[in-house]
Image 1 (tube, rainbow, N blue to C red):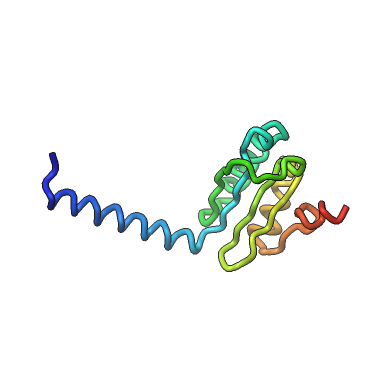
Image 2 (image 1 turned 45 degrees about the vertical axis):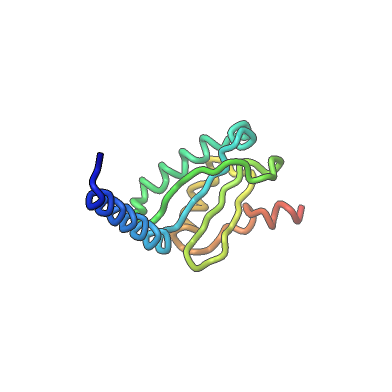
Length: 125
């Protein structure tokens, strides 16, 4: 059994890590891929792997790729959110692996969302 002092040290170390993670999140661009059953069935797995490969190839250390569950619009899958700190979230729909390099180059690197791939463009059709 741990002593009270040991438990307090563990608590402080954990809180410190949580605070560091929070600070990092404020400066990191996030790419979130919908990986529920509907997304996977629509091809989200190769899309996510393409994002990981492209970000590694470009050595973008301030970008994370993660997955989420159902976003709720199965007909638009595969869906990807790009969240740049201080900017509005952009949702890309019907994403294919061949679209990834353009999204990374134009949006993630240069800050210009690829409008024709976004949910707004899809809803206008």
